[in-house]
Length: 101
View 1: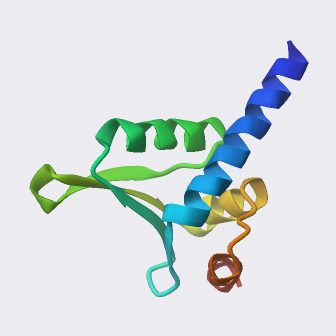
View 2: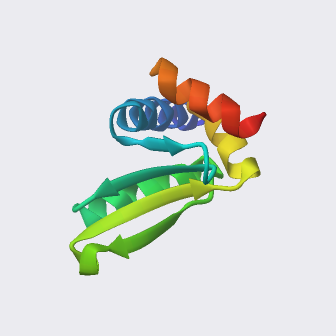
């Protein structure tokens, strides 16, 4: 059972890495990681995966409910994000390091 849990953790972590490498915006001025999508249930799935890794985030309806934004904010949450999901995109990692410094 422990092996299955470990594999699930790695699967979630790697999927989130690919997703955030492609879709995320790292805003240094507001110290936030955000993803915008029209896929509400997809955003909720991402939120659930982040929560599984003990990373708190919030989902907001934008554009009168036609799109949704997932936001990770707060130094503790961004620190957990960086230690669990090491992005491969160099500019995004650089921005995350700026937020944490």
